[in-house]
Amino acid sequence: MASAIAASFLVLLLAFPTVFGADHEVGDTSGWALGVNYNTWASGKTFTVGDTLVFKYDSTHQVDEVDESGYNSCSSSNSIKNYQDGNSKIELTSPGKRYFLCPISGHCAGGMKLQINVAAASGTPPTTPSGTPPTTPSNPSPSPPSESGSTNTTSPPKPSGAVTVSSGIGLLVGSFFVSAIMFGFMG
Image (tube, rainbow, N blue to C red; front, side, top):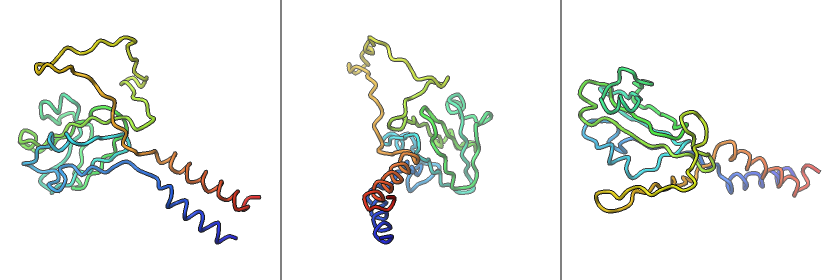
């Protein structure tokens, strides 16, 4: 009986894997280095709360997280955080824009800067800087046409398919108890 329960639990673990956020290796195989166009690298990707940026670089580089002003001026004088370990993993914990650059002289101006927009995870409402959910106008007016004549519309973020750790664990625990009841383990 115990082996049947253990086997059913193993089947449940395999049938309901917990999906964690994606790891995005910045620059792909080129890593965090001079000569990489990070705007192009980021343009085809969706970054979602729960994902992780992985910066891989040698000892001639670093990573500073900065605000928008620091990003635009290539200044890390007011950096939010500095990373120097050569394999920096930065978890994306909240929706919004994030900015990174290499603080070594000339590197940011040479293209070592990255701006991303982190979308809320599925089921997580976006928040404003004050922490309150944003309000949507009841009759939003369309944006004026761009120079190309197309209307500028904002589409909702694409779901990433990631679930939070707690809901994944809850699913596994709940499934275990259901199977345990079905097999008479708890009765």
